[in-house]
Image 1: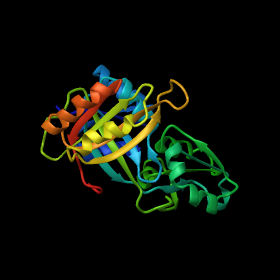
Image 2 (image 1 turned 90 degrees about the vertical axis):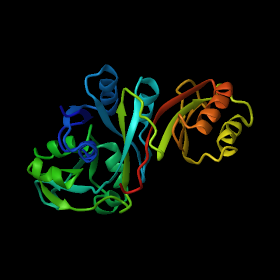
Image 3 (image 1 turned 30 degrees about the vertical axis):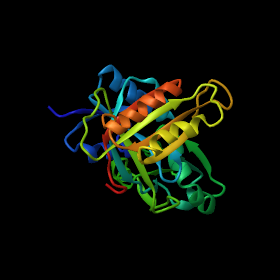
Length: 273
């Protein structure tokens, strides 16, 4: 039986497109937000979930990172998807008074919207496909969504490639309940919390990777929500959690950090795969 995959709905989201790329024969179940997708994986309601981790224009997706930190799930794969936004609607461009889309999509098209529709009201929706569905109702409404959503929801493509850069790529995480084994070409994602960090504490943590020549591909801080200036650090590195050098580095880090969570080790992909 094919895998049941949780994605953001309704039909036609970029999450669905990423899921189809990862598992073409998979069956899809749609959810209202990324938190619901990851919760469904944890509960066993779906086999895996596909959620966005970061975008090349707008950075990390906070809701996904927060859910991965809280939930008992693992990242088991990644998908890099080139994102091409279109402006969709049933009316003429000069009729448009409201443009709808997911907050990430609106942000990725900020320059275009400011130049082309400076007076138009922008409204956020739960997903790009939800925006397309709503845009069926009035000629004064348009949606930023995928071109395929135009056919699905009976809309015309008013304008194509409206994102602010052609290098618009979203990295999606495949989330499961069981950890992936090593392949020899892996990436590991971590979350680290340094409670009341002393001067140089983060430098010492990063040094554990440097002295072992473990390449870090990403590091960022995200508020812990425990107080101003208090952060979780999210780190991606090359290698699998079972690799001896990675194991050694993590053992040293756990002695200093208040919390070290392995979010997952999984096969890494190239930038356009």
